Image (cartoon, rainbow, N blue to C red; front, side):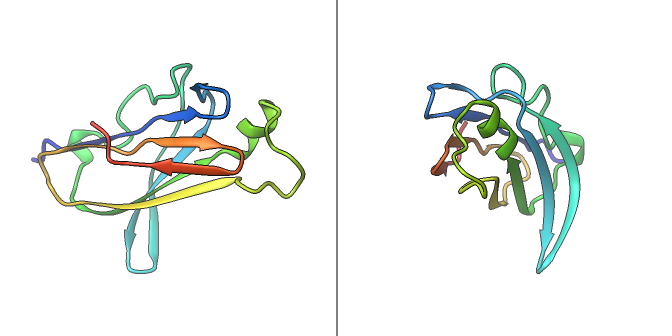
Length: 119
């Protein structure tokens, strides 16, 4: 069994705070095929309450996190006109080490975002 796992969080860089209530979906990617394997919401700290991919379900491969940011940006008064510039933010990444903790955060503002491999 692998000891690796995946976590994430979302920070609102426009307001300088955690982004609470953002829906996140995790997909396993194989070629052009996507299979949804998890869904969750961010908590008051902008994190998920548990790893989005826990140790007992971890497998190396290509994955995609989709952050559904539109409702959050609207509620925060940051959305601008419809259609939103950023509504759903996909981040595709690979996890090769079956023993590693992968952390893929989203730093969000209404007109830009960034990510990195965290710890």
